[in-house]
Length: 371
Image (cartoon, rainbow, N blue to C red; front, side, top):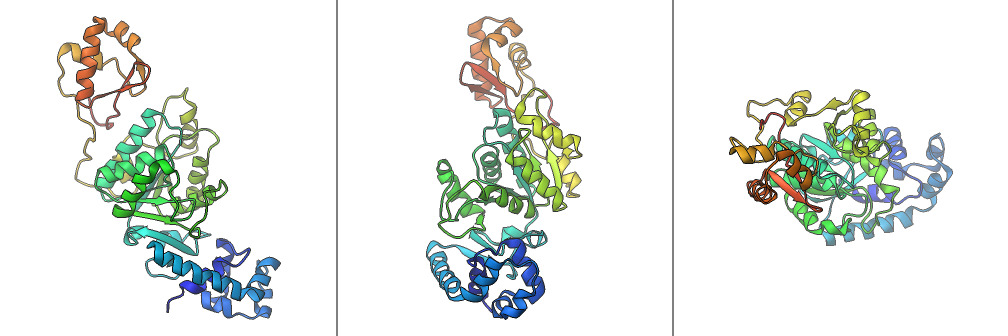
């Protein structure tokens, strides 16, 4: 039986959140049985608020009409609706305390049940954080882990791009309707993920991206995954909400260390102090999740190999954190024009990145690589 109309009717009933719906299902058995329950039976539910009781008893026709409109709109926009009782509803997500009653999906529904890892972090990420997130996502995607993130700018975007670069699978969990691209800067990425992975949301089509929706969205990011990797996070940030929700859901939490004087890494360091697994490479995550493989993790950056003496001298002065060219000249003790030549050579080889303000940085390498 197609129960999408029943689930949508419940979703459009005022005051019925995911946690309350789960309790109703446990009590009555299914969405159709909830809608068929008498007022007397519903009043006996101590967790049901008056607003929800009135909606279930007196606004059934209004909710049903809204459900019908939503089904037509979903068909028009090409969205698939997975209800809580659908065989394709992701089993890991179904285990959490407040699973969404309905998932709107654009793209592959199958990958929602594949083993995956969530990757989250700061929107205003450092270049180091972006490099690490993209590299780590590429490594893990090459080992058949689905990379799940929240489609925000910064670390989320880097994680999605890293998975796509490996021709792997990635899931974007939206804090708005599936038909709205937010942030708009990611419009091209949105299309790529829809084609090669999945974009999902629990909110009705046309729902705007309001701030309060994102913390609720985070529980889905962690709920879909075997564990959560935090790449960069300030002491107080939405990213840490995801990490704590992951712990409540029984998921593993991993954290990428950064500079001790960087506010962007303070949240990660605190998580490590609280017991999160410190991550140097994708192998650490695979090992912790008991997904070890005999295939070595590939380096996603060109390795320097043996450099000519002057190039080695300049390269050895660089770090993954940006360094001003004046400091490089002073440390390498070579003529400025020669330093510029060498930096250009290293950049063309994919070993160095140039940044605004005449700053340069070594591109992040795998932990096992050597210079």
